[in-house]
Length: 125
Image (cartoon, rainbow, N blue to C red; front, side):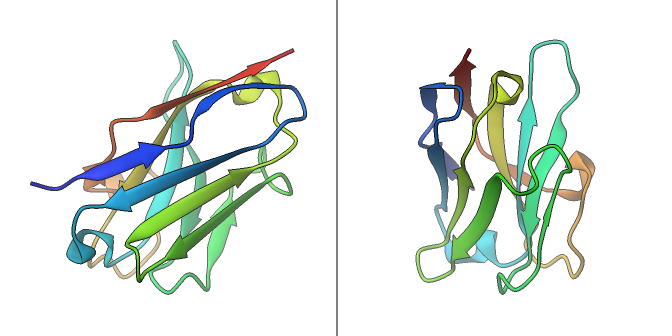
């Protein structure tokens, strides 16, 4: 059974930082592009950041560019999202996603086959 397990969410004040982690249960599930998405109540799931299998290529949503950093440690089958300068509008459930074997980095939720259970990030004003 595929498992992507997120951790690191929580409550933080505006301007604070959090680091999310997502560990894949097996290396083969992390053998491709990975991504972080988020979804606020009543809104569609949106892409936050994506990273290639090697980690050499990263892309970000305009709303988080310059504040968030995605990275991965393939030896640990883990992807990270460092979130700095957090704003109240960042409040949402954050999900990691994996698309093993996919040659191109996807930007849509449908491009990803496996998903974590989500971790809540709440930024107070």
